[in-house]
Image (cartoon, rainbow, N blue to C red):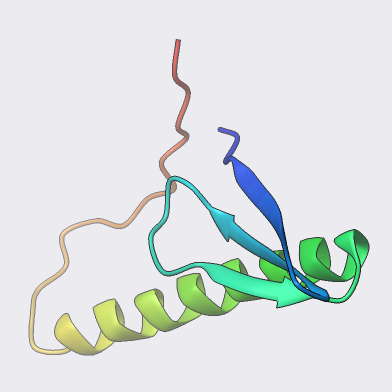
Length: 73
């Protein structure tokens, strides 16, 4: 699975976001910095989402948990 990163010049900054995942956005002074910041923002969002899910499952009986490969044709 590949995600689409968008980079737009915004004054002195480069704004960046991932089209497929609302809320994952950042900025950087250079394209390289914006790209690195975007990877960090995605990682933080996924970590936070996992923590929220773990908390919501605290009183549930989880039958199974597995990695789900995602491939689009």
